[in-house]
Length: 328
Image (tube, rainbow, N blue to C red; front, side, top):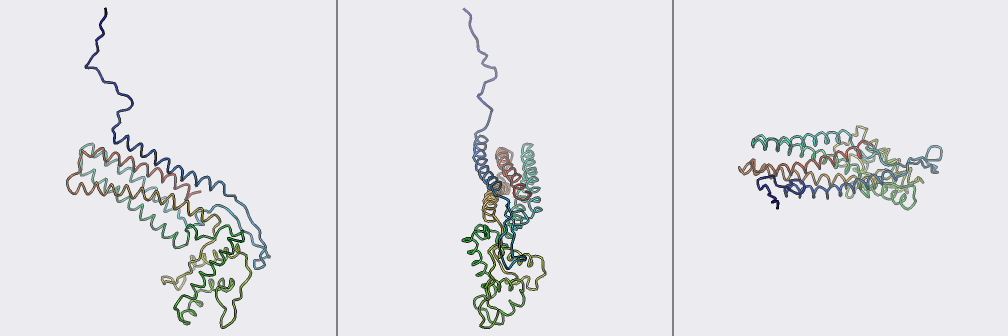
């Protein structure tokens, strides 16, 4: 009878990869995040590809030739005041921050705590730069009324189009006749904004003077939207003498086909991404606070590694968002 002997000193066998509980939990969390952002990005791609690109010709006696043409297509970056250079700078900033967190983990693995803390501080600074640039982008969107529900689109439909005309009429009336303003202030407003005043007179937002009734020109909603864009373009390019005042220019709702859908997608994708960036910055602040109190060292190597995995995921999401929103 042959006896079988087992070598107790031999290597032990393990099922799967030798993965720590923390790393396993982080990867499971990232899988859920991937599904979340995949849904957002996928919805944006489907909506963008399903938006038809066509040219409409509508009868309008106020337009040259008695007709007005408008091209209906998904908004371009220029059409929604999206600066490509800002997106490119933010992409470069996040890539550099991924490098700095890797260097922090490498330094901590070599037990060089001071260098690791320096790289973590660099990562925090780069993340803050990203958020500041994003804040300037959001401010530009708010200033140009590129917000969900604030943009004029689908004006070829009567119910939507005439509601848009009513909105523009009210905005111009509030601009030229603000509550509590004296007659002298109203006269200065009219004298200083001839382009906007002409539009206001044409759509009956204000009276031409005296007791005369408003002389409304029967413009179609599409032509009204085009005129609004022309007025807004005038204020963006001209050196207005009222620059810097509270009434530098009228904040009119622009005409951007599919603009409300674009704005909803933009703020949903970039907003959730910014929240994830903010979450990473909070963790970096906690690390630096621990370092200031002398409680951060090589024993936190796994902590830095797992945070780095999360930060790389945040960077990768932005690498997908940048070309989708800023380049095409």
